[in-house]
Amino acid sequence: MISGVTVQALREAAHALDSTDHRTALVAIQTAQDALDAAKAHHMAELERTADYELDGVSTVTAWARAHLRLDARQTRSLINADTTMRELPTLGEAAVAGQVRLDHVKLFTFGLKHIGAKVVTDAEPWLLAVATTHEPVQLRRVVRALRDAVYPDALDEEWINGMSKEDLKISAVPEGWHLSGFLKTETGAKLKAVLDSLSIPVVANDDRPVAERRVAGLDRLLTSVLEAGLPTSKGIRPQLSVIVGVETLHEAMTAEPGKAEPTGEPAELAGFGPIGPQLLSYLACTGDITPILTSDDDIEQAQVLNVGDTIRLATPAQRKAVIARQHGQCAAPGCLHTHLEIHHTTWWSRGGKTDLDGLIGICQSCHSLVHRGLLVIETLGHGKFDLTTRDGRPLNHTRRRTTRHQIRHIRRTAQHTRQPDHPIRT
Image 1: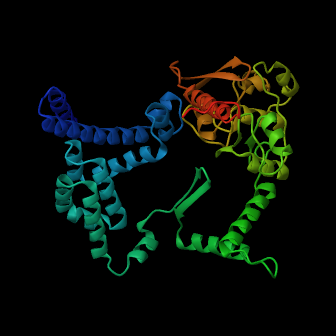
Image 2: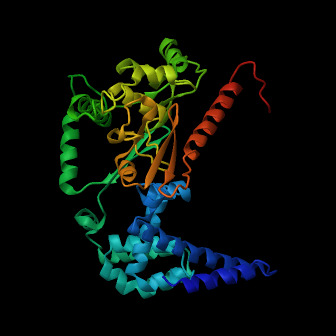
Image 3: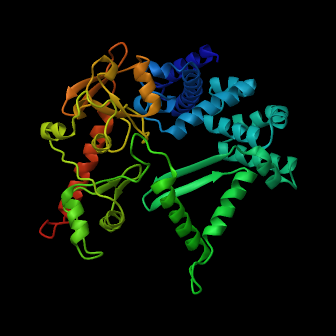
């Protein structure tokens, strides 16, 4: 990447800030911003290539970007893909570094490389770039799609199926439930369709439910059976749904008449999803097991019950559940959102550590490996609290997620207070 061009764009923007010609200032600022975006994409790709993010005690580049840049995984991956495209199309890369095109333009070249083909896009790069440097991204999108239609007039769907798009499967939490999206190759999709078709067959003669409803119900039965017996255990605990809820909220949901629960405590949290309402809570509690876990500011009594000292090396199932509940089902490493956790002795068992609750922490497999490589250091503070630092002693921002959670709780309590009948409503 040509850093000198980027620096020059920044200098021109700095001089333009004091200009009374707002048109000149805006052009210079936009150029500098676009050049910086290209530079950010380059450095993000290099960070992933060198794995230097591990020096800050995180296991992935997306976790690092989330903790240090407040970028989500989609934004981070988009930057890395943009750098790949700029390397494959050097002329485009030079234009991006100079601030002549935006990353939104680069994304459309990425789309072209994937959906049209490298040879076609490379041959068309000069005139596509001419469009990009003179028009907004929406116009370039029209041109790229028209090029795809021209190259594959009768076989767009074929080209898609034959590999123009990478396989992908995503499941994302949304307020109403889960949004499932993705693309499967021919044989994998055929297998899934065969399973869903079998599951959607009417189970009784007068089953008049829509096919889609029967399909989802069948898939739910399949997933239930797999979670109950079809997957191996992880240190004594099978993969399962976990709901973390206070006793007051649970009692209200289980004792109130259907549809009339009025929660007074904090909402229950479905691990990996977020808060859920009292009706769903009562349904899950009715169909699942309940594990009571005592929590307070002083966990000494609880720890005495669960501690096993040096008599057992691996954490017991009860200890694992307690650690997962304490961490709300997420890896303790900052920026890491993984929910499949391994239980780690902060004082290693091989170094005399005990299998006591206050010395156990839940971290994902990748972050666990960082600990044993000396890149992530965990210090026990007592009562289930830990301090995470890099190998050179720099503190990690491990309080951000906890602070955000506390803010969300404060917002919920405020909202619950305003819903009370005797609370005056301001208009």
